[in-house]
Length: 285
Image (spheres, one colour):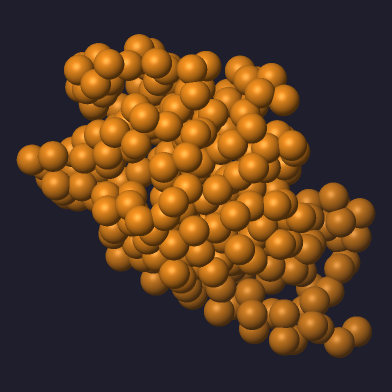
């Protein structure tokens, strides 16, 4: 039979990966490549242990493994990320959605009644994952997603289309807002802005530093809360009486965030993520 036995090919490439990655991670990376690049899940592999793949697929798998060995994140290699029930396209123009961000969206959906947010802002939308997930859950809401990057918005628009979500995408810089939407009432503001201090770069993995957009990650050490301050300045005038602002935050900045909110006339509470780290801040008037 023409082609390559998948199980043998899989063992070969996992062995290549295990020279750089721990065995468990190498196995996981291979599973992701097979599922997200070729649609071959574990169930299909178990049902057909003699499954063979064509030479062109073998070559594509080899190239994918080589990209991983060169340090490229697997999400950029496959081009997609699973975010809840959504399949989100990613590229080096957008930050890779993290599980913590997915958790924040889940908490928002659980905390708010479906009919409550009439208007939603997602500030710094990147891939659009937050805005799209909220638009799918709060089907009657008007969702606006802002980003300073045209390339990011192009990816976000494609993701909204592929996930059949109605989102209004706006090119704007929240630090220098121009859009009239920023000066209209809003019920829910959500943001996962840049919050990693420049001094924290030394502790980060090369596959993050070398591949993901720096402007979506880092803030200056001398003003690490500048995005939160600006977003709260806008929310101070536009947030409806029962509205909320949800932030993903730097785990080291929990107390500083609460102090900032208090100084600006808001009530706020920090929520720990599944790893027991201060990860979310919920703000209200």
